[in-house]
Amino acid sequence: MAQLILRGGHVIDPSQNIDGVMDVAFENGRVSGIGPSVKPGPDTEIRDVSGYIVTPGLIDLHTHVYWGGTSLGINADEFCRTSGVTTSVDTGSAGPGNFMGFRKHVIEKSEARILAYLHVSFAGIYAFSKTVMVGESEEMRLMAPADAVKVADANRDVIVGIKVRVGKHSSGTSGTQPLDIALQVADETGMPLMCHIDHPPPTYEEVVDRLRPGDILTHCFRPFPNAPCTGQGTVKPAVQRARERGVIFDVGHGGGSFSFKTARTMMANGFYPDTISSDIHTVCIDGPAFDQVTTLSKFLCLGMDLKDVIAATTVNCGSALQRPEFGSLRVGALGDATILSVKKGSFDYIDVTGEHLIGDRKIVSEGVVLKGAMWHPRDNKFAKLA
Image (tube, rainbow, N blue to C red; front, side, top):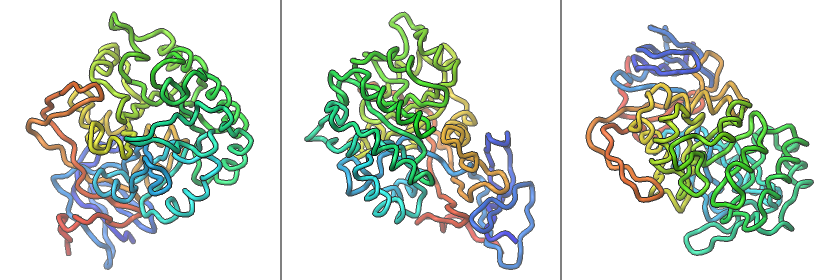
């Protein structure tokens, strides 16, 4: 019998094309039932979520949650509470030289789920703060492909891919050399690659031309220079070719990597992001990214349908992670769910260039189910039913 039932919420689960009022049940840390009226057992905890939206547990595909081990790490459990993110995917905070510390002291102790892309640089992103900023890919002696393969192979339960950062701020004048090394590691391990891009060199085109099907380009809607679109308002041909062969385009908002102008241009051309992520870290958590629900809200206000926004932080992320049990409320899937509301009003959003957008809606995290149980300091707002 179900241990928990969320009763009467508006369930949006793009993995099953569900968009309607129904119950969701959980047992033994998994989804055990979904339908118009799920029968409880004598000891079932029932929570009334009528009037709220229930989705699969939100996945943020680009975060930095090596709290205490790197200067950019935030607390994953607190992020879960405030932003409804039940799975934070850390993208390269740690490399092979310090990953075991990340695993032992953060991943294994966190209640919220953490998966990770392992950085090909030995110590990951080790000098990223408001006062010190040193690109870890500038120094080629830090590239550690053999060590990365060994660590990735030994930690496949939590490591989902390989990470590299290239661009003027992260790799200096090294161009595509760190990317080429990271691709060798990805090939050797059979894992996807996530690549960060910032200012040239290298160019956007040089980067996406190297990416394989299933690889992820994060910061895909970054501003000029190295935007995915031309000054004439078209999508660059290399970007179109990359999507056609299966490269995944991820938002990765962060502190310098998302602009409304680029997003409008790309979306006007029918080019929507595959996944929406916050790239949350200590330098952007107080703005302009703030959190995942704020990042999702920006796309809602830019004209994306709510179901498509939800898909970009649930089922699409599960597909990118090659873990179909994530991002779904199918029976047998992970017992994670996020309870949301969409507020109406006038909300001021800002991008990394300083442009403001006044939106009429805001997605708000109201609570989460984690591993089959209610997990939120505000969960008393959902009445228990006899």
